[in-house]
Image 1 (cartoon, helix red, strand yellow):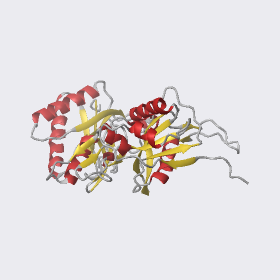
Image 2 (image 1 turned 135 degrees about the vertical axis):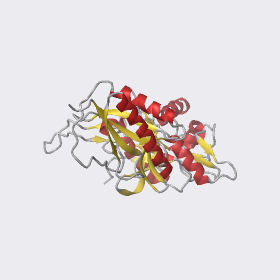
Image 3 (image 1 turned 90 degrees about the vertical axis):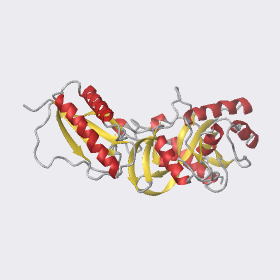
Image 4 (image 1 turned 180 degrees about the horizontal axis):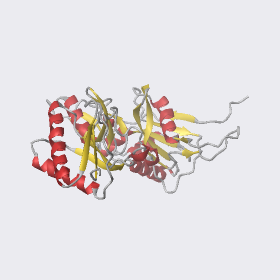
Length: 354
């Protein structure tokens, strides 16, 4: 009896060591002329970044790890957690990943590979070019290796996609027992990335694989991997790994007052301008926090060192003085322990209690 129909995963051997400016689509078309309609081409992000020149050169005599740490900082918009030299960060692409996804493996010793600048756009270009060269309509997934929270080991996930939905939404469907599904959305592009890595491997030098047998209509509009990003209100860990320490005694609730966002922005601008010797960069954004005034989470963009901790106190203190001079009631809640998160404290402000 023949096996039932299913998916198959095929490596694409014979590809060269890619360099900036190389024709990835042309090389792939030459190595895999057997590509067919509805195939899913899964390409490792390192190859895409290389051909697009998204690299950092390490100057001779420069410590490679120091250069890597600088590159991580440049690609980071938020430090989610830190332990020693390891940083889990949110990149400018919106991914939360160790070391900003910067790779130093399978590359020359004088080079670091960044994530592609826009992997969704890269996937669209590769898909369009393969259609021109081979006359086939394929989907493309750009994959990268991520760790998983609370699980050892790594797995490939999608950071770019074109020609297929990132999520298959089963919400509202009814299962075989009559239960209506409320939250189930399958990250199909991540599953494809992981499946493809089984034949690509980490050491085999095969950067591209093809998954055959999956038939999914392309979405309109094609939003790539953007539906996978869970930030903003959906982020349950926006404050990192440290809890906040509240006041030790009862404090009166603050009354919300219009103009809090502008007041906070102005106060920090004044504070930073008045204390230029403290190179502290804050990320703050007003949030609605119920009936206890408005809340602003204050983050550091750089590692928290003893010097930076002093800077935090100086700048926050100056901002509080400015706010209080303008008639605002304030309450500053520092984090329990500096060093585990980019969050350094929470500022509440509002009208003075009656």
